[in-house]
Length: 215
Ligand SMILES: [Zn+2]
Image (cartoon, rainbow, N blue to C red; front, side):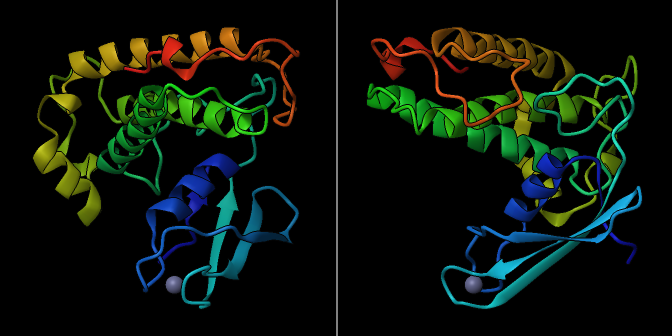
């Protein structure tokens, strides 16, 4: 099997989240080594499963970012679809992120400054994952091609996804999710061009989570 090729580090992390430890644990907080610094770089993520202690490792080839691309949260530059995460798995990622956000919104609790960067990432992931599904859709096609679902997990998602994978529904979801990103960033004073993910928003009353809709 060729080395998995991640387009970005963010994509590598999504991939690792989709592959549980043999014990069933998805949680994995790896360290990273650069095995080959020349583009395409080779990265080795390694660490122990927090549940069973097993050593886990993932090695990725990391595509060189294209020159002149805007910074910020990107799963894959340009229009090329992923080669390591299929369309069904992207839907799984998008829906899981959406559920996390809905759960937070329903709790009505304010976010602490320390929580904001992680929730911001989840809001971005819920939107960007929909973009990744759409990259598998040929122009003008009325449905995603069968070969966009090459994993068992992706095919299982496809079999139950119903209208969620329809091109019109994907377009609508995309618009809603990116609007939610803009709303979140406005609410918490996040500058979308700010690369510093640990940035703390300006002091002030913290708005309630319930003010944001994520659908
Ligand atoms: Zn384990």
